[in-house]
Length: 202
Image (cartoon, rainbow, N blue to C red):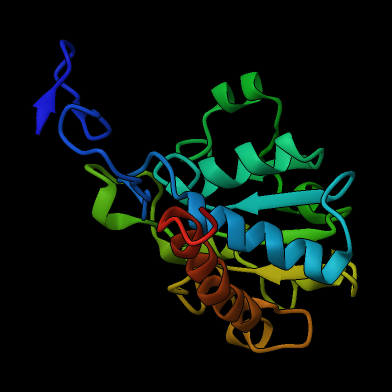
């Protein structure tokens, strides 16, 4: 493995490997196949991506899923809102075209899709909020917060779920949840990616 002048590892150098490389998720940077399966699930259920209002709630700062989803959604014409504690949702994200919303009710009230992210303690070097109880109170999706969410809104989560924190079990297993569909679609999407990069269509 070589390193760039800035010290970052250069994983894609053709000097080292003349082959296709699939990013299976790198740190807090990106997770392209998760974004593909999430987008596929939204399109499968809603029939389109363009014009959808998608709210991404949770630990945006440390989430590779959030970054890839945001890029894909914006590219395909969706409206993206992100929400969570101020320490986990920097306003700098507004520069790439998303709406930053501190209030959960405002973030989700017009959402066609809500994609929830877990708190990624393993990537945090300090405490970003007082505790999971407070997080669940202000940013968790539970029967109380569902009162101002449309019955047509899809509930998504890349997993694993912290039940009772970002998502109540009754909602995770409820009729608006498409989490199991995400898992099923993930298998198909990743098989398709491997099929294509393996040169099956050459």
